[in-house]
Image 1: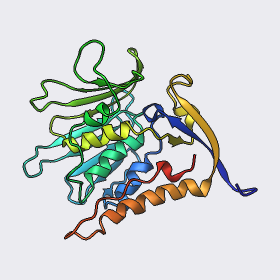
Image 2: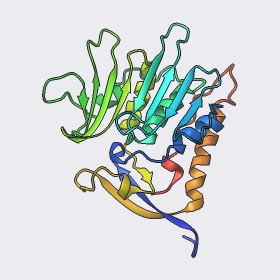
Image 3: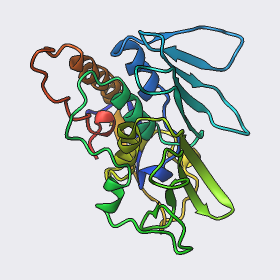
Length: 260
């Protein structure tokens, strides 16, 4: 690393669902710059509102100590009823971004799995010991559950917790959310790659090395800014693809574009 260069200490954390929320700009900036979502401005309110170009989808980020911080709503469209998804404050932005990236994809892959359980089953997630429906991560800290009969439309809940009385975050998808969006979330949830956090010590729900792995390194500040720019450009390129013969969307950039 160049002598005297401006660097920032970055923590690379696994598993990603225990890394803390991260920088909201990882979601909001690409939605605005790459996907054309417009934003409102109210200097008196500590919230962010972004609406899709067709005004059918709305993303709200609003601090709420008693509830979900992120809410994504969509009005009725063709044959699909209105739906919503919400995410707790400590839900990693990389997981929420997987949902918004899938929602804004102009040419979603027809062969992508639509069963949210499939990515989990591939990595040996198992039913809970209580015999209830759903799947639990091998380390026991994440529980993915669809309420009600799987033959009908019912909401999904993904809960991260260190113990029964130590919840960390919860993601909720209502019964009318497109399965591919929920699957995008569960796929990102099972990604084994670490995520980068500048405020790792403050964001981690636990420092127990048997639960969370944290590796720190100095990274050039320009590389941190460049990682978000790379993400914006990658997502913007999807909308520039020819519509007559669409190519598959580019693979999302490596986490924050930072070397580990």
